[in-house]
Length: 126
Image (cartoon, rainbow, N blue to C red; front, side):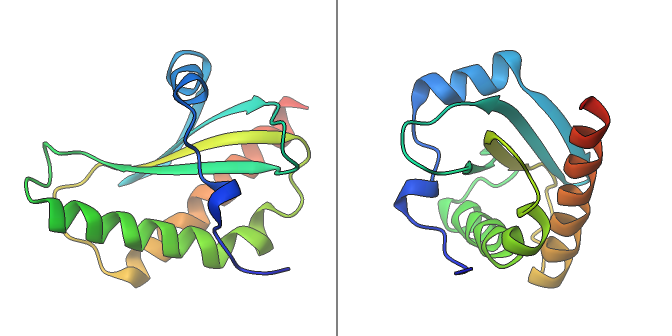
């Protein structure tokens, strides 16, 4: 499988994002939090993902954008090996909640932990 994060995989729908925060469940591996909801997409994508960094914690846009790039890269490189077994279609929102600027290795380790917690919580619900 390709390790891409293309346009079709990005979560952009305001309706779906609203549904995420009203009906969604969450798992966390501090400082990352994954809010997810099972949904149906018209295009043939199993997971659509968005990333978010609080303006309260990072005042400068360059810092927020750097953290978002790190989150997207860690997601892109690890989604195939960890989320390949997921059945159904999901909308994800990955949020970073610390005030410290992270290193990539730290973000990647926490992203893997987050995916494992998500898979565990979904297999328990089946």
